Length: 254
Image 1: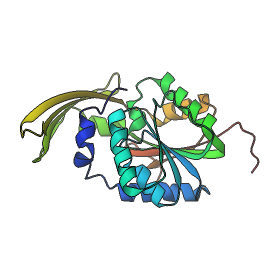
Image 2: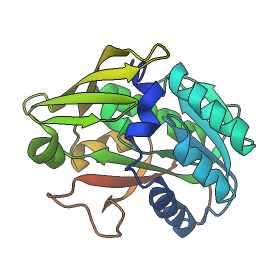
Image 3: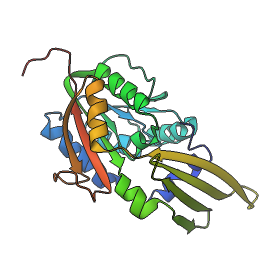
Image 4: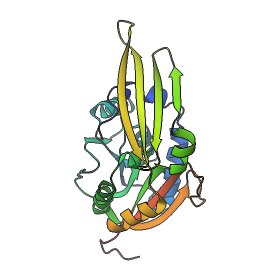
């Protein structure tokens, strides 16, 4: 789970192709479809807080949890600039603790792919279930095996910019279903020299059936799986999917 140390410094620069505004609108529409138009939400694996800030713009009270101190430092800088009342907590999502329950939990941009063991996935889902209001919902996305096998695995991605450059090598093991990212960063520092930093990240693909089983074992209720940014069912060629699960066990009546 240790990642985004050197990369945190330039994360937003290299993620400027991610349409966070559109993503936040999609997530917001899913929340509203489930009757959640306001209230307290948890952004689990919030990173630098880009999505957290946009959901706060939609009127939600936000908590952000991440295990990277460097990423949260950038999130705090954004908070200071925007003036939004967001609570950020430095915690591992496998052991996170809140002061009370929330209406919904969100975990976007591959966070669950970083969980390499099914038992840890179940643990996270159990904690989410515990901290959700009765019949609250959990929305999270996943990169699929199809994406790793056909797009990312055994590929090299490179980008050169004035402030920094990176080389991103991928290797996908079909047996373990783990994708290894070897990330070499060349960051220009105050003396105008470029210094190299290397990080290794690991993500695992899960089938929808495995996710359903983990949700059930955690005591939650599986609701649906969408092909990302649509209301169409997830399919074999989906590159990213969105899962919606519902809190179960607190005894709410409908």
